[in-house]
Length: 220
Image 1: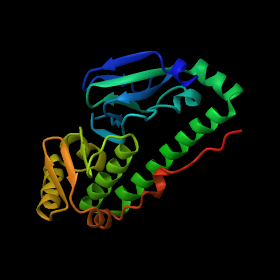
Image 2 (image 1 turned 180 degrees about the vertical axis):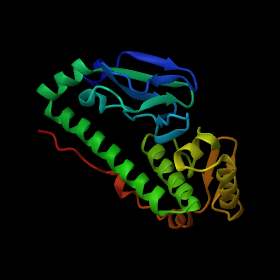
Image 3 (image 1 turned 45 degrees about the vertical axis):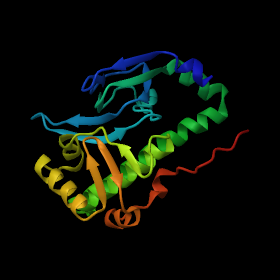
Image 4 (image 1 turned 60 degrees about the horizontal axis):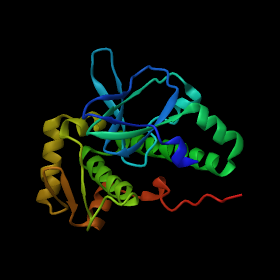
């Protein structure tokens, strides 16, 4: 069933719009390859990135029920995306209880990540926020087999990190330099290696429970 509903695949270029802000969708998008970001724009053009999406993520599953999107999704890198028609999602929710619970869990975890991001933005300083994010991305990418020896490719620019954390590019650059100088990470180009996992976790006050990575769904 899953293979059937994800058979319609589209490739997007870096920075290409995947889901237009304010649009009404007839399908939901699943990332198969690449990095994408959910965002909203203010009237003056400033952008707030509200989520980063990696392979295995539904970017807009909520559009199945909400229809009109208050936010949008753009590709950060070349992305391969499967479009899952809402008609197929209706069929799943009517006839496949196990898959329905899987989709429900996906939306619950998405909401848990949003709540955690709100907490980091509201109560952590900039260095803590970035450290927390680097830990989160490691665990999310590890879950889909995209890490090696505590290292991974972070295909996200410093400007994009700034749009997510409410920071200037200069401030993001300074924080990354500090983390490198303190021996917590090594970064070269798009490659990040976490040199001291325990210290980086402590720096970011990171607890991965909100990702529910070991969550199991009972079959009927």
